Amino acid sequence: MLRRTSINAIRETSEPEGRNKLLTCSLLVLAAVVVLSAGCGGGGQGSSEQQEEGSADEATQTELAESETPAPEVTGAPQPGGSAEAGPVEVETTVVATGLEAPWDLVFTPDGNALVTERDSSRLLSVDSSGNVEELQRLPENGTGEGGLLGIALSPNYESDGYVYTYYTTHTDNRVTRFRLGEEPEPILTGIPVRSYHNGGRIAFGPDGNLYIGTGDGGDTSTSQDLNSYGGKILRITPEGEIPPDNPFSNSPVYSYGHRNVQGLAWDEGGQLYATEFGQNRYDEVNRILPGGNYGWPEVEGEGGFFASGEYVEPISTWATSEASPSGAEILKNGAIPQWEGNFFMAALRGQRLYRLALGPDGTVTEQEELLLGQAGRLRHVVQAPDGSLWVLTSNRDGRGTPVSDDDRILRLAPANG
Image 1 (cartoon, rainbow, N blue to C red):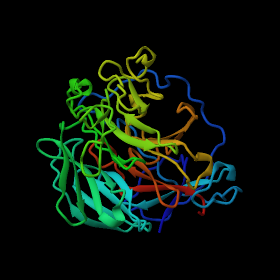
Image 2: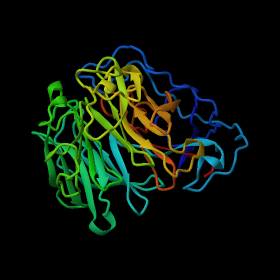
Image 3: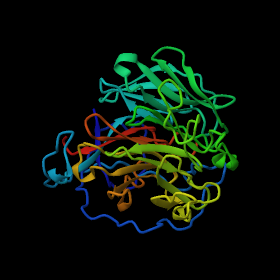
């Protein structure tokens, strides 16, 4: 049974062993939001090369606190496909599943179950809506540090061809493979730079039916500006691993370059791609991705790219590295939370929060809100479920977090009583 808590529970406490009781609390989502100022985040101590994703420092999680407070009056929860005109709803957080080990990515199958990758164990799991977890198989990854079993995506024709795509680390490279459940993986793109950090790893099929791949620079900053390297890029290939004829660089899978470490990919309703990117010592970024765009690394970190003069594309938002270390991303489309429709969500590792960004028609950020701050520790990914809710992966057993007894978890943000 799902456990329930408010988005902004604040009572700090120790975590009891074997915590599996029902947790419940609710809170109206605030109508007021913090307006994002240009170049927000400021300076701050960044993560080192070896601490790319940021350690937990002295921070501890806040218990998803129990409460008897009656729920305030709210409008009825909409059905999936609702719009912002339906009016705001109360949002609550429930715990779907517990006891995972550094989950990294999640994708929903047509039957409504989730396929989840675990970075360090190499396990591919199935998780149903009741939180039942089943190991399906183990994949032949061989990673250390930030490497391992990372991204997962389903074929656009999954119901007919059954193909699952994964991104994982080997002794010699990071690679993209495809397979049918229970079978050995077939490599379709190899040669992505590998190291114990800066491995990228997010993969997703875009609205055009092509597979997009976020990579890292593998600790070698020169790869990001080198169009002959797959490092520090967003790559785009067909489901068979071929190069689409309309890619911006002839006979190349490179779609955009000048990235440091891309771990989040999300498209808006109009098909525009956005990506999250780890900074080094100053700024983490969200970028609006243009075909052939150069995003500046290692020449530029954060703002200052002066794209108008023909150099680099500016990020749409930045944070101090201590506030973010951004990983997975999602844009809510035809979701179950009307006031968040069309918003960009970003899971933060070192920042230990879920960022919500409202986007204007031109892709600029008009509002920002911090969700789950300090409640669940490090957050790896956020995905829209078939019912329009948001599922969030924690990452507290990744060697840098401070796990509690039931970590790692899958959380669900949805309308109260929906």
